[in-house]
Every structure is written in C-alpha cells, then in structure tokens.
Length: 103
Image (cartoon, rainbow, N blue to C red; front, side):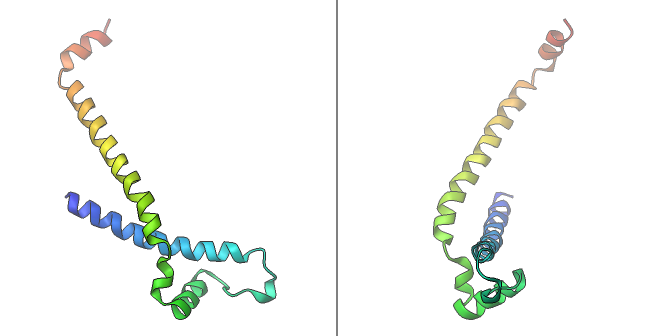
C-alpha cells in the first residue's frame, strides 16, 4: 500500500512540476507587449517548450523542487501516523472516556 502511495506522490510531483513550469512562463510573459508574446495559451506553451527545449525543458528545477517537497511530504505522513496512533491508543479505553464526559 505504501509503495502505491509513494508512486502516486512521485507522479503527482511530475505533473505538478511541468504545470508549474508552464504557469511560470505564462506569468512572466504577462507584463510583456502583447505583440511579442511567445506563448498564447497553456496548451501552446506546452507545445512550444516541448518543441524548443524538449521534454526536459518542462522539468527544469525538478531537483530543487523535490528537495523541498519530499521532506515536506514525509513530515506530513509521519505526523499523520503519529497523531493517528496516539488517538487510537486513547480511544482504546472508551469506558474511561464515557464516564468523564457524562459528569
């Protein structure tokens, strides 16, 4: 199950990063004169970047992005597991909790 989760996380990072690269390029172009725009739309930007820089151009900054995202995700999953285990251990004594809440 965890292998599937990590695989899904890796693919999500792939797609999100290429989307971020395209979005950044479109945002940088926003202040430029309309007649000199290189990218017209999201799809057009994808095509131009893939044609001019290859698919590798869509993943510029992937190493830096992963250095930031992977520890964040690990901390998130670890926190979830620790809190979940703590709450489950506390709920294993329902009699004690129900007597406290009824008073």
